[in-house]
Length: 610
Image (tube, rainbow, N blue to C red; front, side, top):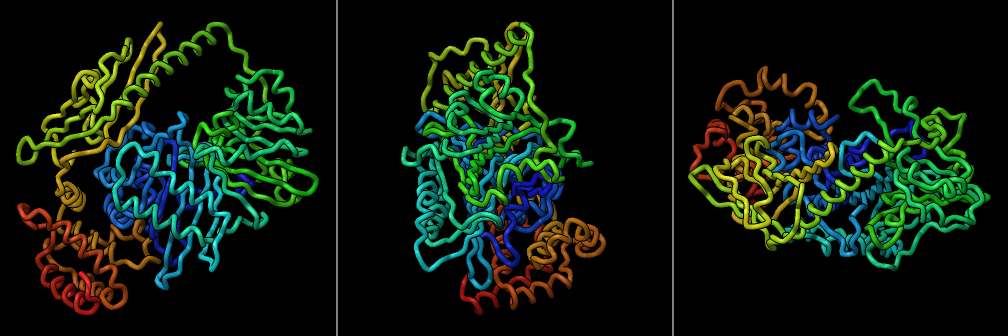
């Protein structure tokens, strides 16, 4: 865990154990990338996925993973912190109900980065993962920490989980908009079951550990004391007040970013024995530009006495906001022996995997007056954009969808509260649904301060609750830009939209046949798809239009006896494709329909459910 050379990839940490499948899951993050969130269901379905480009290039695989898992997940993120996507995907619509934007009443931000995942195998055995990270749900290339705690049911109550249960129940209370009932059910089920789930710490740490959730109320006080002999702080962001809390600690070490350290006074920095920043020349030497890491985003605190060590891992930066009731934060406190997990092990100069190999000693950057003036103006302009954004969020935007013709609709963005008095001098802003091209569909958001915005002639496939906003300001040749996406509540979304999306992704009966083979494939063979399946499919599985390939018929019969849940999954697909009676059903091969009627009849007679 403390060796940078032993890399754990984000997606790998989410994967279920062998023979287990996802039951439900809760994720929390400050910021969110839609492309990254698309990769999460693929991890639960055991697909290989290297980056967001690969996800979008394999839309049928992604469709399968999302249809299996999207309804099982609820993701909480800070209101206004969904990032504008650089790519387009029809699959984003499946993420809309999954994402819940939140806003703490404390006035701070929602900053925890955790996953709480429940898995189950065919023997009904339950397995939990609690993942505590310093990383948001993004394909970021910074150095981060990931802590994974495995959990299994116990026959007795686990009092250590009380804080975790309290945190789970707290999440719906700060939602900006109404949460779907099935997502609330997920939270309730997990909350009830957590009382008897025993989590185990990683190797080399004691069995005793603590969950910490700051910003829920004042019951969890500042967790890091000043009673240690030595203390190591790893954090990208810093504040004077935090760094000055540890006057009694004799030896203090600090790892941070150059810009953050430059803002701290020399008097405070002198209190630390050694200070490091990442050495750009010594960062990850991976030949693959996609996986090469750079920059620091980890938050790690190691307090050390003669023989024992206490370690905190999680989301809190070394700032006043990060360790007070202002922000909502998540940390795990671990304990161990100094000789195994102490500061010396983390900064061992004789180890190839040591963090010290990535560091160099800090030296203050000296800015000239011109650079200082520009930096101060940039901060001032950024503050103005933040203020504009805050006022925009307070308006309580919502969407109404109304038909304009048989296949075209209008998207109406309306504010609950109109604040026409707000002075937005110097700021220009546009908005557009993320499914539409910005250049040809953008509308000036100043209209929202007076009335509403209407996007006309929007195709059914492009209807969405996800709306992108872009704010710009320029002063004295210095400009600042802010982009974000809001997941707005929708009234009037046509039920047949998802049917249309599935048809657009499958395209024809060959695509339908390909998808059936994905649904019928054994889990242990699913990794072969990315490498072998597509070529095999083109070469002979489905090249005859509207015909039922014999191997597929055999696989259906096999699934009926060995894994009937696959039959139910196919039934749900066919039911979804058949919702719209007005569309000629040429996507389902004629040769398949008769076979399927017989398969489904047998399924209902044997299992009595449909």
